[in-house]
Image 1: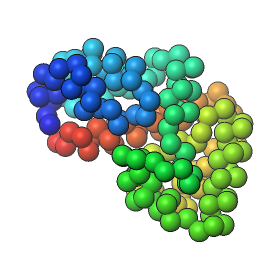
Image 2 (image 1 turned 180 degrees about the horizontal axis):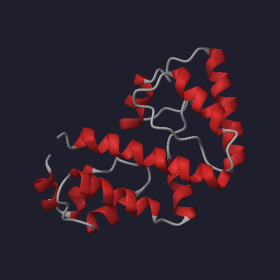
Image 3 (image 1 turned 90 degrees about the vertical axis):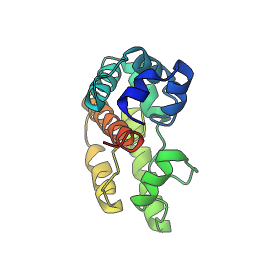
Image 4 (image 1 turned 180 degrees about the vertical axis):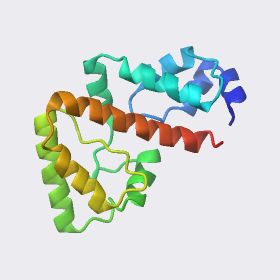
Length: 164
């Protein structure tokens, strides 16, 4: 796929191509589809970022709530599966799994949405340290941080879908 082909995709094909970009985010993909044509991949990314950042807080929370939980025993698919596997999150010891679950519960209880971080290139330890640190944040600031991380995730996935 390249930017010229992407710009020429039919609406349904565009939606199908990006269906795994962000989980349960059809409205984002629809808005992105309507923003075409893109001059380059960076233009696509800028539009995606703008769509997500300009969303209501409820829409942002919905995006975060539907993002797969890190270190969870729940089976994930697509990009999330490979990203979590590469970070070693499916190979947690029983103690590590319990710790991740406990910290995720603390974070989600305080923030109102699951912990999101772009795991590409991070180790289990780095992810857990980020989770511990961000548990001490305040929910208003953390919403912005989590959305930034979600956008990073989307950018990484776009780079995989449309290599330079």
